[in-house]
Amino acid sequence: KYPLIVKLGTISAASAEVYSYAPDEDRRVEDPKLVDHLAHFGIDPTGMRKTEKTTSELEVDANAKFEWSAIAEAGERLVPVSAAGTIGLVNLGNSCYVNSVVQLLSSLPETRERYGAET
Image 1 (cartoon, one colour):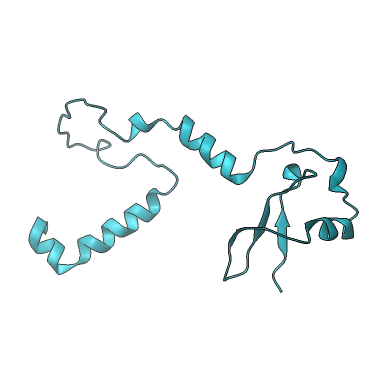
Image 2: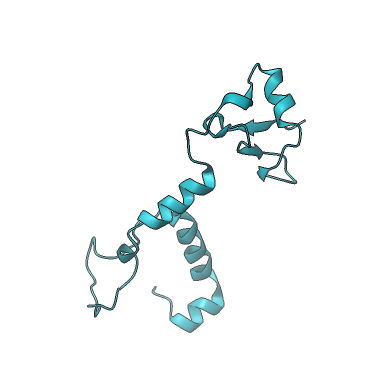
């Protein structure tokens, strides 16, 4: 019902990156019949070598290269600012989720009572 996805550049004689989009998995999986499944499409992994990074390797590289100082104070003294264009978040690719949570929290009566509500 749900096909397995193989990242072609990760196929080697030893393994390949296989991903399942099935609702109960939705993650990287092991395919014990990988050789047979690849053979169905005319792919023989015995002579192949990996030419691309796996998703996990790409994530590790992205974290290693990420400019963490862009989101942390790094020991610097912060100066309060308040003006147009000076308030907000640096978009990290997931800022929309953070924004949604902040909006949700700010709509709760308990949060508004504790931190004050501007009217």
